[in-house]
Each structure stands twice: as structure tokens, then as C-alpha cells.
Image (cartoon, rainbow, N blue to C red; front, top):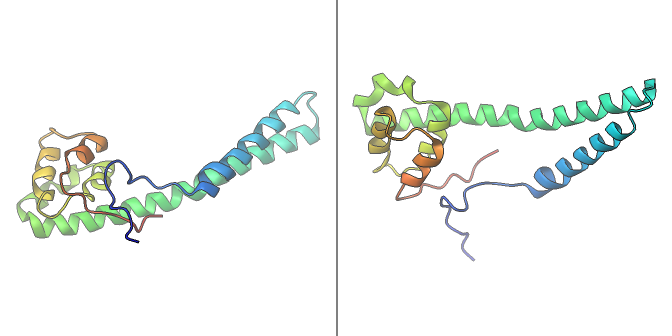
Length: 143
């Protein structure tokens, strides 16, 4: 069985146990702690503090690796674009991180043209960049 080819419609990645089960359990825990907050006691303060800490921890456990991943994507795409369109090397700092993460899906043939459109202000939002890609380059090694 061959895996489904990645494209604009199916490129997002969800880990059900993390994105749905854990997030749901933490939200329920927070709602329960909030409901038990009054009357305000040391125990109710502890419960809401712990529920808040768990929510923050779950958020940052995801946010920190995604930030590192975005930095690696930016580096990879800069190196790829330097090879494909050396004339754009001087302007690469003008491309925003979210634009780099969208450009990574472009084929080698499309990348220089799309990068020029980004630098010209024709493509600003990552969703618009992804929609402009004709030949999708899959990225299956994401955190």
C-alpha cells in the first residue's frame, strides 16, 4: 500500500493522543479546578495553579520543538534557494519565518519564482504561498 501523496489538503499533522485526548483532558481538568475555585482556599488555589501549570507545560512542550523545527526549515530552505537562485541571496533576510515554512513545500523548479513573488510582496501569507504551489514537495519529517 503506497502512502497518500502529501498536498495542500492533507499536509497538516495531528497526533490524536496529543492534540485531542491530552488537550481535552487538560481542558477538563482546568474547568474542574476553575469550578472548585470558590470558596477560595489554599487547596482550591493549589488545584487551579496545578491545572494552569499543566496547560502551560503542554503548550510549551509543543511550541519549543516547533520553533527549533522552523529554524531548521529556514536554514534548509535558504541553502536550497542559494543553489537554485543565487541572485536572491542578498534578500533572503526579508523572508519571514512563516513564509519559509510554506516555501519548503515548493518543488525546486517553482521555488525561485515563488521566492521572487514573496520578496515582491505578491505572496505574503503562508496559506497563499501554499495555494500557489503546483508541484508539492512533501515534508513528512516534522515534529
